[in-house]
Length: 208
Image (cartoon, one colour):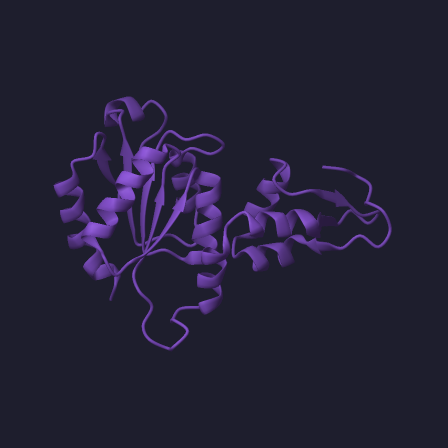
């Protein structure tokens, strides 16, 4: 992070302003600055300022559908109860398409959003507030285990139901750290009928 501000007149935000704007916690914003996802500097007084253009670029990268859904709030635009929201996270396009198709079969009325890694997922969780999360474990930039640990820490709103998928066994995954106890593990290749049944059975309480 740079110690000197950019040219005079450049627009910037505080860490708290960015957290409110993106719908995430202040520690998450600080972490993204440290990882280089947001450009920032410190003022002479030691306060962190975040470049507005990098914030806008991060917002734009999430797509208009996610931002529109976040703007609607807990209910739809017409005031009707909002549909169940499901987030699917997987870096493999084929697996992501398969998981999306399973969700569509199990929960045809659900609002489905997608992410390619844990970093994108945390952004969308902050904005979209999904009820159900289906995530792969091994992904670039931020893997599923790190993302789940972040959710367990309580700094980001947590989906009521979480399913973790992987071609590795639970014993192999245990070397990286255990899954949170309330996360349901679904091995790859996906057993489609089983996952459909799990989603239908588990999502009913989440929708109430």
